[in-house]
Length: 248
Image 1: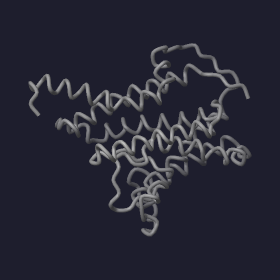
Image 2: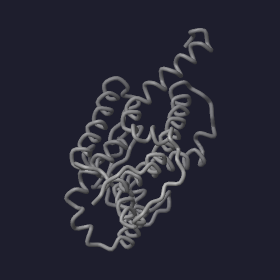
Image 3: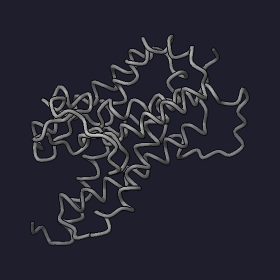
């Protein structure tokens, strides 16, 4: 299969990255600098956050077949997620990131390597619809039941929710905590949805609109993701010190 870079995919990733930068800057202001902003705790902010992660996960699944050495790439992303976990555990335990989005994307990319030959036997439309349906059904599995956004369809056995190891799958124990939590269930199904959607793409993709800055950001999304929180925090801390004259 011919592999090429699609500028539009890089641009979508770049726009999602910009949205994420703004969202995380707002998160830092609220949770680290004590900004009183009720809107950020409401439904609109939740939709904003979900739009970012849905875009990244769907797009990662969509682009999986465009890459080379998927197993190696998945391992690299997974290790980046492990590095974030280690750094937050050592220096910011109150804001620990365990099983964050990079861990999910790396694990999903690696898991799809052995699954792809069997999944290719499924019709693409049925696969996309089925994967998305399973994602919706399992959306609240981390909270102990099947359902979507608080709609409880069926409770799951409490014995599934045992440890931090089961949390990687989507079954966190009662004392589990992570500021960025994206386990395999339900999110691998959204990744699969993107993968099946790629099989439904038009044979010829005409890119009539170009967004060079967004595309450039999208091509460097992993690098920028790894750096963005320290940079944002440093800028906000500098601004806070300037505004308060150095007072905490």
